[in-house]
Length: 294
Figure (cartoon, rainbow, N blue to C red):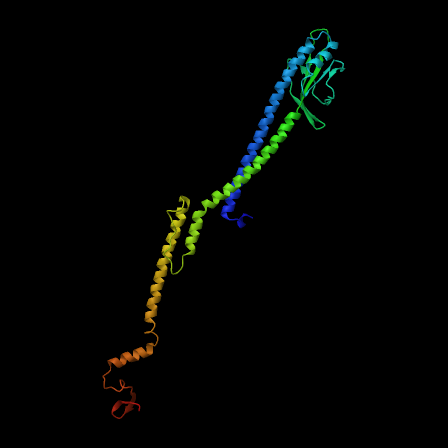
């Protein structure tokens, strides 16, 4: 397919492809780095809420006091959802409208590092920590606490970032392609100059030569070899012209070789002989004679 494209177009397509790969690769790398950064921010936020809820749960006077204290403390925390359950699975506190999936990993003690879990529910994505706290009253059973944050703000930011990066990538690829075509076009200018110079070469203008000093180093060898070829062509054409000229001068003398030999023999005969006067030889009693017509 590429054989139908000129060298300029091939270089422009290659440059555009490389630029597209670089731009798209950097865009993907930036998105991955941003996602990891948000994950680390969510981890810090969850750990901060973990300390807050742990302080409330552990220092509560009783399990009945936990819901009111949590409601008071978490009232102004936008996007934060919490569920507190006792050892029997009874819900002591739940953020309104929050319903986590039943497939979450089992809670871990608060002194162990818990992995962040994520899930999607009705187009919303959550990240959460599932922990187990022991109340200050050692006789009380441990409590399971699920702390989750809504990633709606992050998702909106990532969607806007993806649209911006996509628009930037399209513009960057287009501009890179145009610059690549312009660079290839200007780079091929010496070849076009050599082509123009070659079209002026004819049998009457064999003295034209390629401009070696005006072309890049990569094309100087080609121009030099073309000049050598033109030198050989000019020399061969000159020898052929000289040979044709000599042949043209010799052609009148060689046109009637029989007549030329006859004239040469007459030149060597005596002036009074019959042959010189155009006589015809005859054989008589006194020998050979010549009879001149008319």
